Image 1 (cartoon, rainbow, N blue to C red):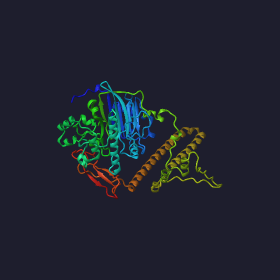
Image 2: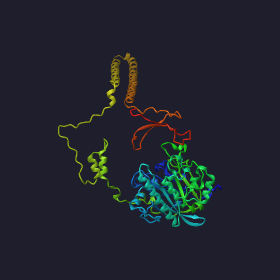
Image 3: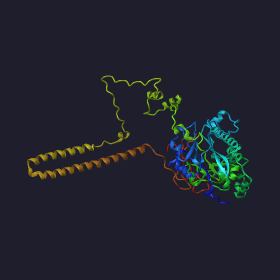
Image 4: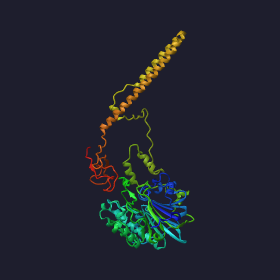
Length: 556
């Protein structure tokens, strides 16, 4: 394959699961500029509309499009940032069209007859898709390209209903993408798909039961296209154990662009577990993709790759390069974030700030209130700021002759175990007073007898030195006393509150283990155990975690 000349390329697109918008701690503009792309699609922003600030939403040189989770805060969410020279001609949120009530939408919604209205609403309720449509010039011909930025659901093994939800999302995504493609626009589907396609895309496929029978992989097989040339190249170049899996693509309309350019590359992962430090040993999966329609992949894509060197998230970015130029629209479509009332400088309705509260949740929160929280009357006043309902009762006046009780300061538990100490301060004060009395007496004598004036001066200086010495000695004594008490206190608490048991050493590396706690619901939830402290990795990697495991016995 001839190495392409990147200087001649005019369009670059990037996708990255950022695991929270706070990943851009150094500044969102700086982070976006560092990716050096015309269209940047991010997933798992974990931000809701009420928490989106202006410096994140309005970035100089870019126009942005956000989709928020409507059911949970700090969950899901996707966003697409387009440079001004890549301003889309249409944009919308979601896959169903239920969230679109403005002109400038992409449209083309596909067949939704197999979904109920409730299912469609739920599929778009978690903020998992943003669609932008752009005009491009390819070899002098004007065309359009639609970018579908998605964060596909994860199938939680503990929640069977989420497996069905994930498959429904896949079907809806495919229906929408193929409908847009049929309308005449090129289509790119990119983002976190949450399924590794082939064994070559997984760190340990043998550890996964029925790898090929996974419903998500079966869907990918039907979604992706495998042209004859790519299949022949795969069969010739790939290792023998992967030959069967590399042909595991069907007659779909889209192409995995990374595998299109790198069909045989192994250990090319985009996601690693942060809990086990698996990125250090590159023990991960490839679940982040750029899918392009077959004709766009063949004629316009010139390169695609992953960026494992970019840190800040448990995923890494994936980029693709096209040999076509973007034609920006004169102004962003209505879905653009800059048109939101909170950022457009428009006057907002008062009703937007008055959120109806769920009384049941309020009552449940009241029952679990902590000491020092609001009193009942104050909570009632906060819930009824307009004065409706019961008014807060006035404070009862104290009867004559009764004094208000003053609360005594709470004592320290350690004070009951301290020995009685001498009041060092009073000793210093008495010594100081004694010296001053003597000094005054000498001054009187000196006025009566001028011959002893010099003697009095010397005596005063020596007495002042004596006072300073007493004070220094008392200060040192006080410091020693405090240090002794602090030491005794730490010894006492160590005897009362036993810390975690000393870690054993793993058998393979002879290194101290780390203590973990079972958080998964079940008979062992809350139990603690020791495992090897090294990062997770393949069993053949001597630098990776060994299989040492030991329960912490109860009572220790």
